Image 1: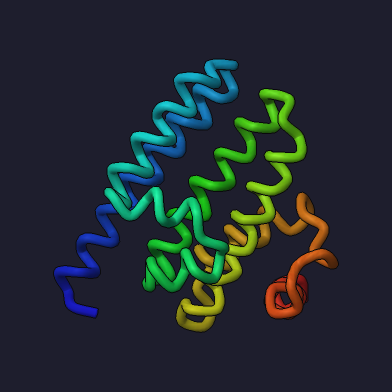
Image 2: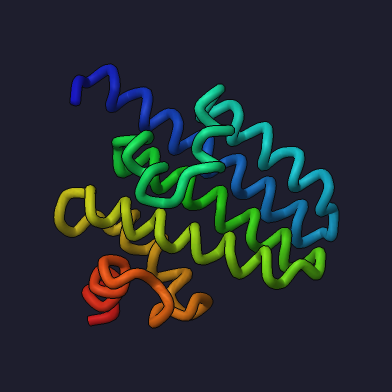
Length: 149
């Protein structure tokens, strides 16, 4: 990866961290519509026209399209925040589905990241207790088991 690409990704991560903080603050304040609007705007800003395609693909397909483990982790973090918003709206089944997607994406990031990349691993660990790992495909179960050690 070139230095220019790496700088872009680092800027993207900084923007994402700031936006996720604002989204979580809105969510905690009960401003769910505003939180969801900011989430959509952030995703559109980070992923551009590719975003609609990402939302339609399974986790492995989205990860392949994104390529870089940092981009996959960013998309996974947005999915996890969307799950939290859905939960507060009383849409438990959709929230669970989105949380599972976020976990699978984080695990995809772990599988593509250099060994010991704590950002990728931390994202996955944060969701492990919220998803029935036994219902994940075998590949994801194996990755999750590595993280639980």
